[in-house]
Length: 216
Image 1 (cartoon, rainbow, N blue to C red):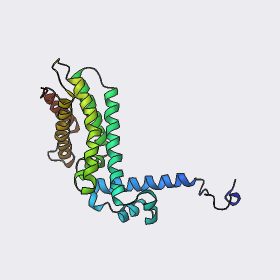
Image 2: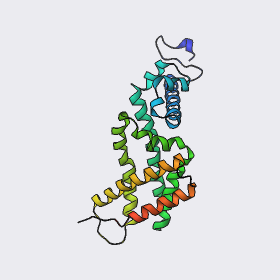
Image 3: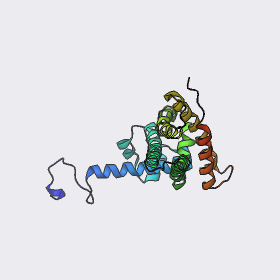
Image 4: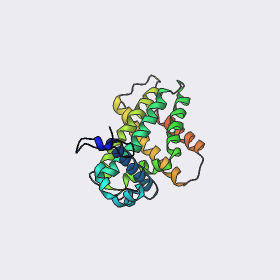
């Protein structure tokens, strides 16, 4: 059916695209624009107008996808963090049985996710803590990291010593904080070290933490 044959009031195709496809494309463009600004200039620069300008869209299309600026910021953080979580879970599924190789396999995969697009690291480890709008969501998303991290620690702690779930979770949270700060410093180039070395250092940090056990 051509556009002229559409019933009055029915959504029309434009350049062969359905209305829902056009909306999805505009949303994707806004997200990519937001990632670019937030990941290079920071959260303060990620305004509605700047995002629309970067995406090449008028401001009315912003509210088609997001209720406000806070909704955009949360979406950007979710986009990056959930991608990192999926990378971790995928690495755990394909990890070798040997504990040392397992740790390095997972850390290498996660580091690769960050190195592939350094905007991700800045958004996760720097910008997520920079404004109140993201603080609450950031705390909720910590679980997206600590859950697979706890699973990895459980696999590593096969020395026969009893460990309760609280101990494993505490270790995962402690490691998350340490690793996040290490990645933050690596991304800023202070100190300037290779990707290979940061992988090895984080792997050693994880291995050193495995024996920590406060289980009653």
